Image (cartoon, rainbow, N blue to C red; front, top):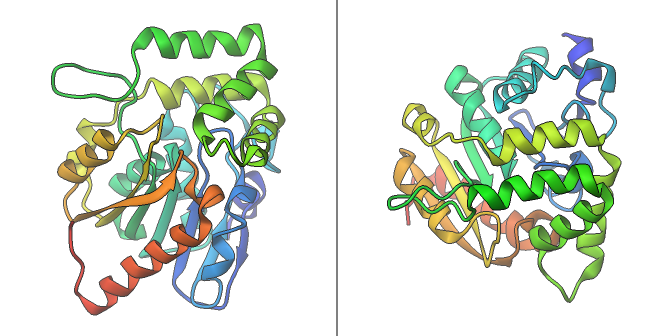
Length: 276
């Protein structure tokens, strides 16, 4: 077991089961964001939580601008964790860009993963008319990245509210804002570029691991069209439109998130999975 990897990514393992379930955070988040969902799986699974290098309690000295210039570096971290824990046929649960990181890892070493479960995934945030609507124009995203340089605190406040929605529960966007602010701004900016300017549509053709797409209602970052695009592009994918609004259902609607994941896994066990 490679202890360096486990320290680097602040890997924590809990649960009573033997089958591994890996939870990957979204951009600007650490493993703590899974605290309302992950414990619900500890009775039956080996639950694995980690932080990206540069966030949470990861080893910041391990950060390399070259390694993490794109999502492949983060995908390699996931594979390093799988290797260190000797994981095979794990269930990977990813939020937002964590979903794409899981997809890239699964293409490299598909035997590591049995299922991919994705909350609010997007293969490309940029609009590419007339065939693809990612939700953003390039100028909008460039302005968002530029805002990080001019006023990082203001950027964190602005983005957290767009991402979270659920305006009647301001404590949710407040927590997300604090998470953004706890990340090193230099690391956050490079991760933001890797996240928002990546285009992984072509890679979807290489995915062989079956998947569940959990699509939130009224999601500013990953519109419904994006979820349906992924469903069409990914073989053996199941699509579920959630009642949850915003982009962080594991924080805003944890009960629904847990239920839909369990429903999917139960259907897999019975062999009655549907691709609706």
